[in-house]
Length: 392
Ligand code: ADP
Ligand code: MG
Image (tube, rainbow, N blue to C red; front, side, top):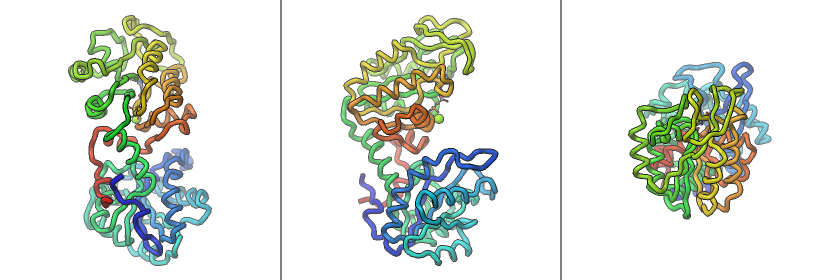
């Protein structure tokens, strides 16, 4: 990676402002953290800073308070949980800027950890207001960005502060950039992408960028329906984007021998976990039924293409994996990837959730913690939160 990291700076005794992604899911009723993956993902950087005698000031957003204080979106439960994971108390302020925060920072000793309140309680955070960014920056001597999941947004805490402080990457950020960067810039071939999920829209630029780089592109999930319809197949009541048929045709003609679409599919008589199911050829989708997953013939064909792969990027489930009856395609795909002798990179929130649900997380080379950010990376875009960091 061509960006400086925490290893490249002296942090002992320094006040280090660390942007982390603690935007964790909370139980709506109890406020309990239901998945602490994002907190755990930031531990290596936090622990490193603690061990090297830094005064650690963590900041994050949580949910969408839209510039107002929302009691249910305070980071207090996160501070408590982080304290348990670190095995040391984590101090917490009720705001992220202002005199109370400045006093708390001034009282920090080497190796102490403080978590600031939800950044998005201030509208200036998302607006990337310079005065707010300067206030945040004023709390610290150096800035570390470890929030890859928000790096595609130019907010005060992800981009603005970097104008006022020396800015470097944390270990999570470094790992994300290393893996995703390799896939985008110099993948080992054969390089194969698997794209699925609900829709084409939102992934058009990913499809177009990857098409120019990969040796093969496998398409599954709901997005395959639009491609199938564009080729003249009848898709019944399947999720289809009729306004994307021309685009699908264009991608099909550009992709030619690189594109692989489903040959058979699992159809349901309703969009329901308990719907009737059957496997049919793509030529034989019954009237009133809908495509919910890829079929076994398709999986076998995809497996053939994948076998020699050295680099694989997967974004988007192969079917409606939330319903166990229609999860087989996604499950089998995860198993195929787990057995490949290749660098396997998973991007996308639902794709990561699917791999976790199947229990194959440890078998993948890299599962990106950033849904939108990983997509923009795969589109070939420069993320503002990454661009703002110091070059090596
Ligand atoms: P990611 O978050 O990994 O980028 P997406 O958000 O694009 O993935 O898509 C995930 C969603 O796509 C899942 O909720 C899944 O149920 C849905 N999906 C996959 N296949 C189909 C299908 N055939 N019909 C309808 N929805 C589908
Ligand atoms: Mg998603």
